[in-house]
Image 1 (cartoon, rainbow, N blue to C red):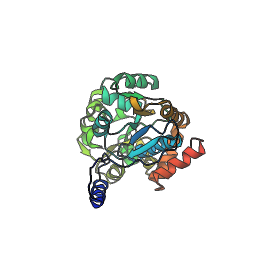
Image 2 (image 1 turned 45 degrees about the vertical axis):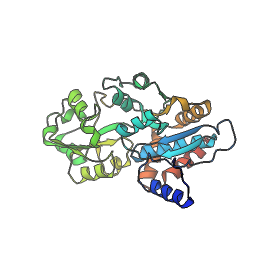
Image 3 (image 1 turned 90 degrees about the vertical axis):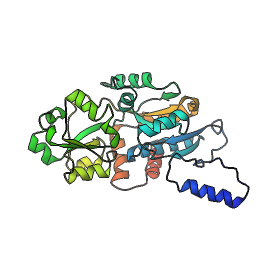
Length: 307
């Protein structure tokens, strides 16, 4: 927050106004006071999308950076890519957890995400010059088209392709941006020939989507494959036989000017330790057990010798 104040009370008032605005991109004080080191001069604003796994990954990145003496400012729960990508490009945030295939497709609708190697290459080729993708983790979390067990049994659904003859009778639920994204409704029509009865805008694979699927407001929905609600509700995620969602390795994307050796080393060390089963377990702690994401991140970092 860059305000010029004459009276101390005015400063306090302005600070309280900014903090209560609810805007995660509003300026805020650094979350840590970095110890004296070569990294102390580095400051990184860590952002996240508006779903629990992204916030958890951002907390992991933030904790790993703090441990190396990097000054960290968190700006979590920003929104979708349509909001945080411009924030990355204009310098409001410096670092975001991403997914190779999904981000590559967002930047280039024709990106090849069929394999892990292709998705990573496509992402690097599509990134703006000011951004850099670091080492990906082996952990993957893919989008899915998920249905209830009853719907799967009724229509004998095992794959996304099985939806083709019945989609006209079903409502698809997903985040609002899915209506126009290449990796959403238009892409499903292009790749699979799917034309649903309608599309219902919900949240980002969160509780609104789960509840809408459970109570029949939608018959198919976008959920992430690491979401514990799939197992908890006996939902069925349909097999993506045409690799529409592609490879989705977790990857840190950072502003190049902030990619110092200390920062890159800390983030790559996280990626080297994070696999899919581990990520799913951590997400379960946050989503099901209602544990604090920062605490879960800190415990994992400590257990893996990263703090």
